[in-house]
Image (tube, rainbow, N blue to C red; front, side, top):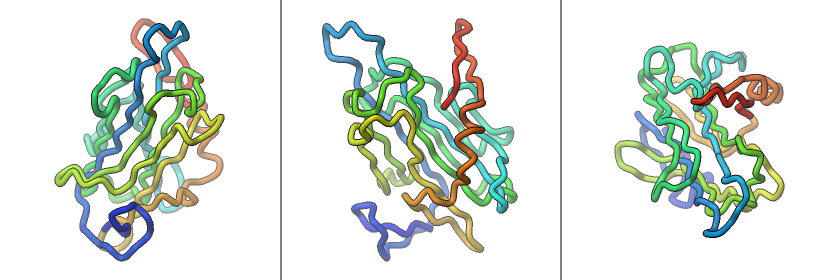
Length: 191
């Protein structure tokens, strides 16, 4: 169940969610720019009731064992007209042990978000396309990573919140320790 109004702020609107998608977009560097192009990554973290890591999906690990969370793959250029990376979450298929789904965006290339042209992300209902949350990453001065939002399981459904306090503080260290294997042998940290 979603507890946000049309603007994405806390409100009274309620709808049952079955499938959600986190979309991440950024634009390629301006024509003639000689710097390394930015590379942003979308990540999805699954936590149990105690806040322990159940599973993690990112560009180096594109899906959970039961395909309840699927990442579309690593985009390196930002050249897509819509979302460069997407993560689909099929809420009814998540293991019963999963109580929190947390979404993150990180700069894999080390470009601060405010230097990445057109960088934004959204959380949408996959079936209807209705956008529940949109975040302009270019407003995050000096940031290389951002906790976007969380979905929390309650007795009958899910609640979506831009309040990321449900994510344990120590999780950033775990994310930083994950090595993402890139085609061609380019290893780097996911966060």
